[in-house]
Image (cartoon, rainbow, N blue to C red; front, side, top):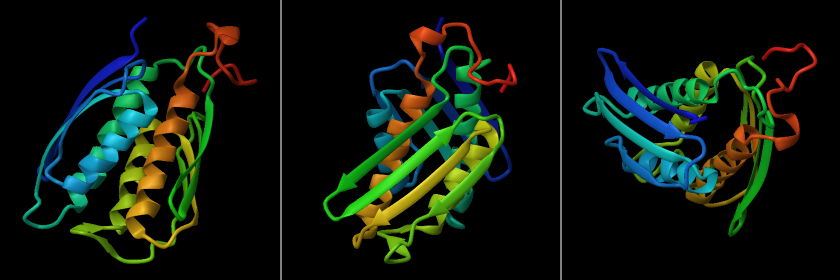
Length: 196
């Protein structure tokens, strides 16, 4: 069984293609036109061990908002398609990741119910040319289309780049844990309801 997806999403603001293999090796090919977003997507791929390709063309002459949000949406759609009916998955994932003075925790549940709790007290508004508010837009787009509950907490940090990077690394690792197949639960949907 291959757990892959290739999703194209086109709007008047963005044209995005995301390809993912949940059982990959961390290979990635990223070109969103937003260098810091590419750096964060690289963290997801490498630490989640996903093969990930993202190609995006957006209205960057306005700002990066639509591109970042729509990449999150399209990634969520791709993960939802790749994971299928969720039989045999672990379902829950969590990770703590440090980077120097920064420490973040991410917890995810493939519940079928979108929800985001994001608590990252960024110490500055911009990381280079990247508006830190877009971090929330990315994850909100992801949870709404992957239908997951996601809790993100930056527990400490002074350097905003470190804060953001620990979030994305922890997200990649938590996503990997939740989407992995549990050999003890092969063919079973991990819910007392019998569906997710």
